Length: 45
Image (cartoon, rainbow, N blue to C red; front, side, top):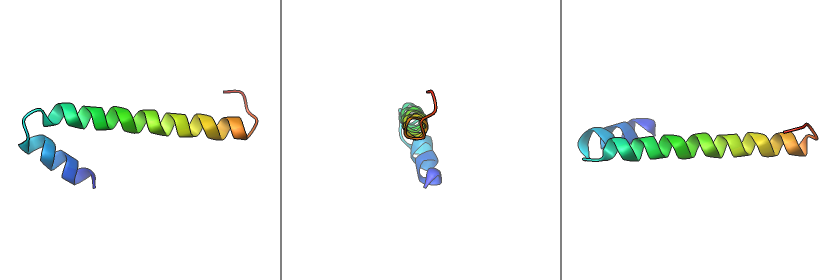
């Protein structure tokens, strides 16, 4: 899956910006999921 994004970034102009945006979104999504899991476990965030 990631290889497709790398190929698009290499081909398309502005693809690096798209790749960076995807990376940022992924980090935010994972961070929110982990924070939610900690809250449901009753641990301080």
